[in-house]
Length: 359
Image 1 (tube, rainbow, N blue to C red):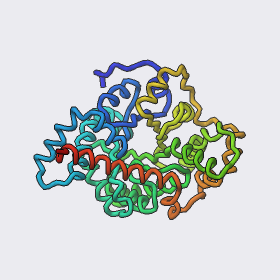
Image 2 (image 1 turned 180 degrees about the vertical axis):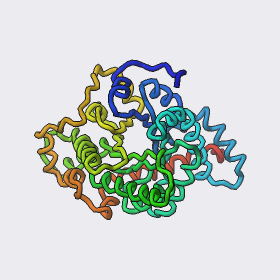
Image 3 (image 1 turned 120 degrees about the vertical axis):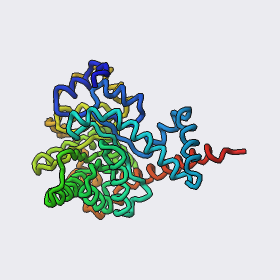
Image 4 (image 1 turned 45 degrees about the horizontal axis):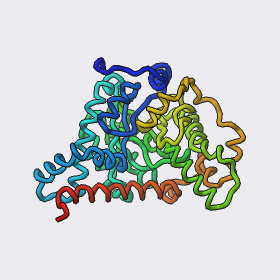
């Protein structure tokens, strides 16, 4: 990466002086290039981000979508749209390949999310994960942390796919997903299959948990210190990290869905991944924060005590707070799956307007 001009600041300092890895929450090539200059070593993506990127750069993607449609005259709008997402992902993955080689697969990866419309079918999720895995050496594939998703995560890991667990907001989801990955890795090892370059991560969408608890508090008329509600995702991320360390899981925890700078600052120093959107990276760079290690510092007790009054926080915070069967109906899971499904529909509509323009 000698052609990258690195940008001094707290992100680069944390990336170079601590185990904490910075990934960019977008596969937009311009943003990813700048994130690498900040010390970024990977990228995440999801259906909303992919749709937003294509829509933002229609000057680039409209002719490319027209070319895909012309090359595949029998394809429907969904197939065309997903091919555009695949093309975008392969190009972003190429930008990260030198980092992947340098880190032996632990970083330098580009996330591609499985089609949310497959969320009820474990085999279809695992099969698509294998398809995406084969697009480039450094792809990491996102599968949701539902009961069905856990089955797909183990199967895909066994088949050699590096997984990024998504639609995950809680300690029990993170722990059970890490256990599924371990089962898949151990099955590979038992058959003499290579795991040396597999770099799985387990996401906790910290900001989306905060968002949900704010809704719950308002809905139920609970009197909770508003400041405490900014710490829910942080508390779950820190607890999951401790469990991962104690149990020796080979996955790293990944912080996503940023809402405030603590969703980076509180995790610096941990052997974790933080994946802020590019705008948040710019905010952190300009914040004046020192980026001192804080992963091992506990959440202020008064905030934790306040949060523990909320049942859905207890479900998210306790290791056994939910069973796998309950993950699907957890509030943030429903909201996020619906948002991802809507993004698929939005991408279909965008492609439709390109290939069948209004008269």
